[in-house]
Image 1 (cartoon, rainbow, N blue to C red):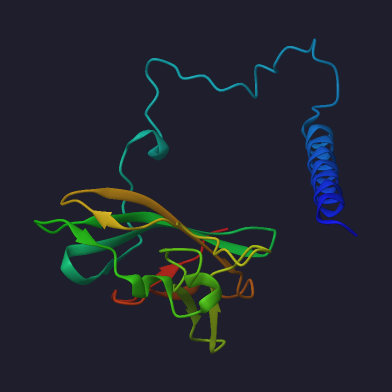
Image 2 (cartoon, rainbow, N blue to C red):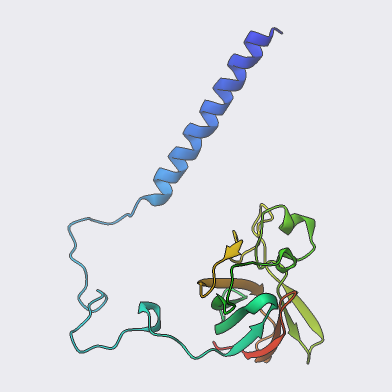
Length: 193
């Protein structure tokens, strides 16, 4: 078999894979149903003049817990929600309360090779169920990427970043867990949902 024949076969295979992926993507994105329907007024989003902004519109939320890190870093946990799908989503804000720029410590990614190779993240976070004596680690997708905020690096003084972490859900009778993140203090949070 010649190199030229092998290269042509490889290009053909790649083209077939790409075309198949695009076709599956187009079918998956199809909305189904008719396009002539008007949106249901009860489900459309509107904001009246006298309505208060939600927390997602810039109003600050009282944190459930504050975890202090080194060099002025502060992790404020704003929500810990249990989903029917069997996982916990932790949302918060990572702030640099220091007077100078700081690099988010690489230890926050944890020490698992699979997570570290995907770049700086909060992949080292754990939830601890002290009643059931279990530790829950950040979930990963099928490619080994942590289901958490990634791409963390340098933070300027006063800078804030919204962050999230997803964990397997402890049993439904467990409502209080301790959140731990390397180089940060730990904090107990209450699970809602």
